[in-house]
Image (cartoon, rainbow, N blue to C red; front, side):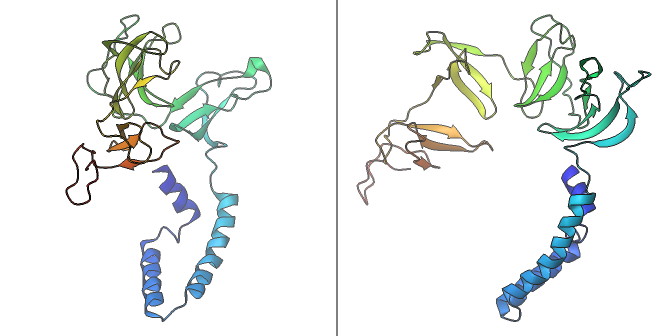
Length: 265
């Protein structure tokens, strides 16, 4: 929603449905030979260049911070140098932060921040695995949602969560040892689903992969199932990035009757 609001502020014409309809009409005229591509682009880029220059000057800069008119709850009541809240955008979405965050004087620095895009917390919040406090607080981090102990920083207990904020099960030992460091292999829930890795991951980057019975047709190495960032399964060579072979369908060790290929997918 924030991106849409900014575009409406800086590029009103481009966001108008009538503008999109007119552009589609121009594309039809180009296809019919009634309008040249160069003329269409010239007519488009002139006004767009002006809008782009105006947006650079007038559009709100959420990275630098937009004043909210509110004082900082943590240091705003100071008689001298009280902080104000700025609306900003970071890797985890919109938040407000204190103007004293980067103060030159160490005593004046303030680290207050608060998320503006609150996640809907599931009904059953988990219990802190370290101190037992409940309910835990749902937070957003660099790698997605997670549950944090309300007693932080005294207690640093966390529980992993899926993209919807639902707590995921803890690591589950599978009774095997990591061949590189000797520690236990565990079944873990990651951003793209379950996987088996060293308990010390990412300190030890050993991940156990399911190897298919079909060798890579490009280099002869093994093939293993993987997932895209959207959760779709595909099959890739374990020698990646040296070998970039991938397939959407699972290869099986059956000889093709038509071309005699040793595997089919």
